[in-house]
Length: 157
Image 1 (cartoon, rainbow, N blue to C red):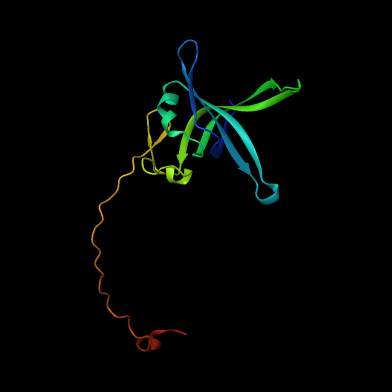
Image 2 (tube, rainbow, N blue to C red):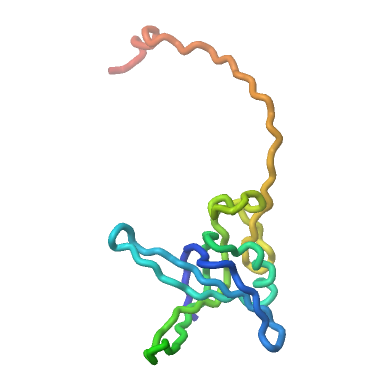
């Protein structure tokens, strides 16, 4: 078995479709950057999550969401408009971790945080954001620092 792990950002909202037999398939594309500066390039991965896992993740995978993907890599061969053979990396996702929250995507905020909860399928669903009530702050009075003159005799050098 081969395996691949990478992180990147979703290029568009995830799409949930169903096979003719009724099996749910969640599809999305991830852009993963390599290098930096003038040598920076982007790899594009088509990813699929099969079954109920895909249905449960649909609402969390929006354009710009940063994810870490663990899965099996396959190469899909296809023909472009000019008749040239092309290869596309496809990933059957075994595990997915959401990184960051909606605020990082430029969305409306709320609802998601960086921490996750295991949904029983090996996927990390985001933990609901809970706001703590603001507590009044009191300034603590600290004792004045000791004078350095008193400590000069104890220093061994």
